[in-house]
Image (cartoon, rainbow, N blue to C red; front, side, top):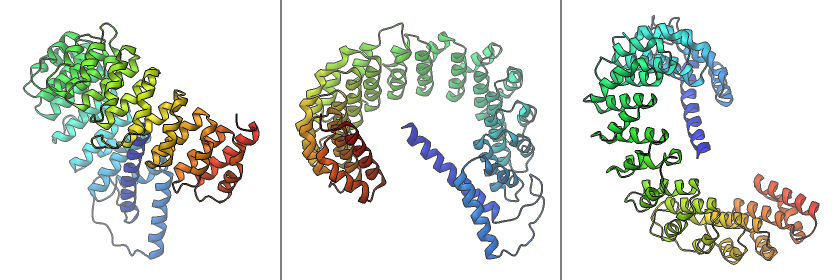
Length: 474
């Protein structure tokens, strides 16, 4: 999941970078961060455009700090949208050499450019930018003041506290940002201001104030926050109390709002001074799947063997959401519970009766769990799955058969090398390599030489090496 998230963010960054570089390289710029005049007309030749597009493509492919000089140039563009995007991306690149130019942009005529520059200076964490950010706290635009306050908080210099306390007197988002910044500094001197705003009419202000007090380790204030009228405030309190190892978080697991209950349960791993098992067991029956899911995960993390029967019940419930059942497979595997093996065997051959989602992923994970737990009694069921199922489930069955090293699976795995799906062929080849079956050498050699998929050819080659190095089937 973390890799998937990285890929999504990385792709978004590339798209934005490509757009701004295209705009920049396709047009001339004038000096100065602000709009200082009209752009001179330029006769663009096809070869010049091609060269610029080539430069964009090169920067796109490199995707590193070599983009910084071009983005610094873009801060002087006539178009405020280009300047704004350049300011934003310089913060994303975390290139500290851009700080002086971004400080200049705090004087830009367009508030959106100033706001982006203030935000990026906070991302860079350059304390030399503090004077410019303190000045930006007086900007005539509230959005700029808000970003300046946030960035000062990220610098975490307690000397900025008085200015932030003053900024907190303002209404709206600026007050929220100032309170958050004060909390981020973890400065006892900020406590009076934080306590004052726990009674604010704006729930966002109250949440920021309670979060700041929580950062100071003030459990009593967080207990108060658990009774707040807004669920967002209670959710923040639940999260912090759990991380502070305060048993009061158990009460939050009973909150009327499922997001608060979820937040509480997700911190139970930090609670050492109170038994969380009963609360987790109760959460398995929660009306929200988004509460049941972390409860299942947490039982697996905590290694609570007494939860095995309840987790098995979750897995056997074909009406349960697929992600909760899948999590139950993972929890039972972590617990290494042999009592779950018959259930795993039943799960991998069941029909689709799970509500919505990637229903087959439950069977996929159960196949792998059977392999990891060394359940040789699962071979017949795995062979059934291998013969006909969703592609990734078939691949998982092949992988599990390889883990089990049961030579009776060799003929089926050999036949599976003819699958139309590259992932299935690759998994079957890998499994045959683990089985060290010399009867598979001829077919594996054909795959290594002729298969159209790089992954299959590599898997076949590795299997051949394994069989040749270790002799016949064990």
